[in-house]
Length: 386
Image 1 (cartoon, rainbow, N blue to C red):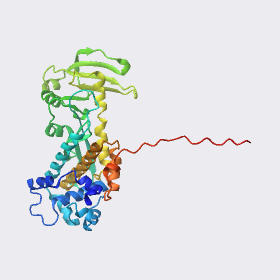
Image 2 (cartoon, one colour):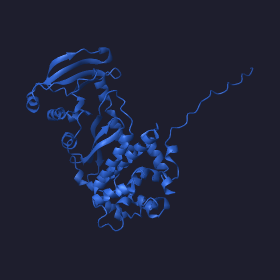
Image 3 (tube, rainbow, N blue to C red):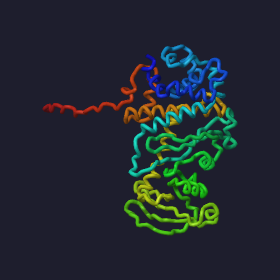
Image 4 (cartoon, rainbow, N blue to C red):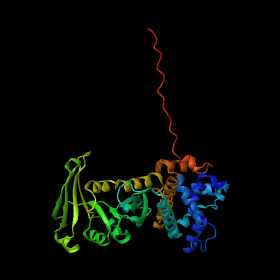
């Protein structure tokens, strides 16, 4: 049966009735004659999972009336109608689908590897280069165009819990202050690109903790110094407050923060961290910032394994639709990894699904842990007399 194909098992994570509720809510199929939203979504998802980067190649698969595709509820796809759908279908349908899968993934995600209570979120952005000639709306400089993916990643399960898509010319800090609202008690990790006195003040007032790097140009005064273990690279651990004129104007006077100077024993690189967490050990703060690489790994995985380099349309709407489906595909793979409790990496899981997508093979077998093989040493060679 079609439900036993790899594609069917992946699609089954989204109940058809649930998806149709999103379609009805945003009137996605209003006035539609041939290509319904379910087929539009299925075509884009198929392209993401298999690596098809042209509408024509997707059309060939969906136009053959293959029973494996048809029994999943997908209709035939025509190149022109798919192109039109990418320009006009409500993106809220995809956003709601993403949120639905995110909640499911969060319930299955493993716990934090850090031994302290509280939610950890890593904030960063990544640019996707676009052709300025084909997409003039994406202009970043006179010769460069692009769109920027802003993400807050849940450190526990590498899950993109908040996503914002904007043209690359819009500053990261502007997007963060407008779009990202963190719950009280959350610890947010971000780099120096988000360094701003008002941003620090807003997070502190909202009861949100942060760990970032301190710019060397910022003036401060030390209120208290803590004992540190220099053998572990902890140069100093201080309670400070900013005393520059700009800081005094934008932040409340003598708002205490914590400054940690750290030298990495492996690389010898010196890093200076800034945080409003006073309850954690010095090394824990350093380890938290080191964990920021996970958001970079997320962007790398997304770009290398999903189709967000070559787009099926030139409008901002079409680009956003394709990126949203790429994020949905990422969540689907993560959910299967969580359900199977497998150690297979995300790129390997995506490669397996994309290669065998129309085969009738259980994902439990394809994505399960490989059996361990006992390697025996070779027999000793015979010693022949000379």
